[in-house]
Image (cartoon, rainbow, N blue to C red; front, top):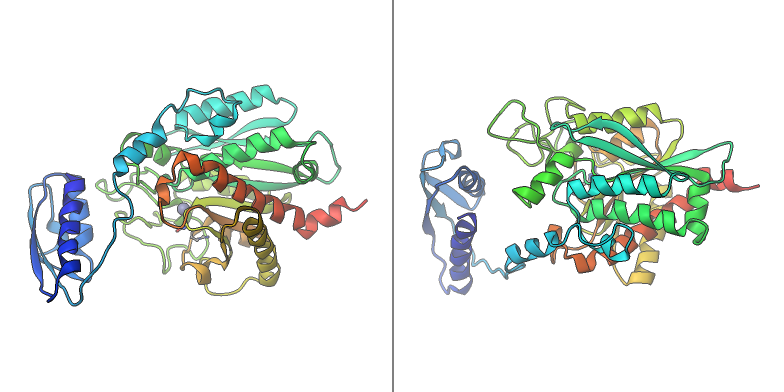
Length: 414
Ligand code: ARG
Ligand code: ZN
C-alpha cells in the first residue's frame, strides 16, 4: 500500500512532466494504515501542497481520506532512480550466514545483527593475541554494544589509540560492513602491509561495528529505511532518536529537531540515548590515549571533519583539510572515484549533536566522519557486489589519515 501511495504520486508527477499547460490537481489518498498516515502527513507538509482535508496534518490517521491540492507552477520532470527496490532488498539479505566467517566472500555480503555477534565472537577466539572484546554498554532494547580492541604484538611504551564506529544510522548498511572489512583486513595484513603494521604497532584500535543495534535489526526485520535508534520517550507514536544528533555539541540547535516524529530528532537531552552515552563514556575515560576518531556513514562520498554544529572553523582546520585532501587524492588515483572533503557544515549542512564534533571538543583533534559510496545511484541500497570497492576506498582513506597524523609520526621516530 505504501508503494501504491508513492506510485500514485509518481504517476501524477509523470503527467506533469509531459504536460503542455500547467494545471493544479487534487489528489485523493485513502489512508488505511498508521504507516500510510505518516507518509501522507509528510507529503502534506511540503510547500508545493495544500492539505484540503482534514484541516491539519496531525489529524491524518488510519481511515482518513486525505485530499491534497498539488500546486503546479512549473512542469516537474523526474526519472526513476531505482526500480524494484523489493528485489534489491531481497538480494541484500540473501544467504547472510552461508559462507564461512573467514572467507573473502563473507565480507562481500551484508550480515544480520545476530550474525555480526557470532562474527565478533569468532574474531576474538581466532586471534586471541590481537583481539579483545569489550562490552561498553547496551542499547535501548538491551542489545550489547561490543567493541573490538585490536593491538599489534609489538608492545611500545607509549601506546596511542584510534576509534572507529559504524552503524550509527540503521539503514546505512555499508557502514557495519566496513567495520567488519577493516577488522578482517587488519588481522590478515598485520606484518604484511606496512601501513597496517605501522598502525597496529603504534596504536590500539577500538572498533564498534554496530553502534545502533536496535535500529539495525529493525532494518532487517521491518523497515529497511529506518535511520534512528528504537527508543520510546515522550511520544509513543513516534519512536527513535537520531544518535548523530544526541551528542553534546550545540545540542538540538538548527539542523536538529526537538520533535520525536522527525528523522533528526535530537532526543530529550544530550546523551539521553544509551547508545550515545555508552560511546561518550568510553571516549571520556580513554581521552588521554585516543588521538584519532572515525565515524562511518553513507552515502555521498565525503570525507568530513568538524564542525557540523557550527559554521566556525576549528583551530587545526588547515591541517585537517590537508589530511582528507591527501586521502581523497589517493582514492581518486586508485579507484577513479571522487570524494568531496571539508568541514561538515560547509560541505553538507549544519548538523548539531554529532559524535565527531563532540569527540573533537573532548580533545580528539583528529576527528572525522566518512560518508562512503555511493552518490545516490543506489543510496542506502548499495548492492553487495559494490561492497568491496566502497570498503577499499574507505580503508585507504583511514590508513592515509592514520599514518599521517603528527602524534604518530613523532612517536614512530626512533
Ligand atoms: N549525514 C550525517 C548526518 O546527517 C552526517 C552529517 C555531518 N554531521 C556530522 N556530525 N559530521 O548525521
Ligand atoms: Zn548517517
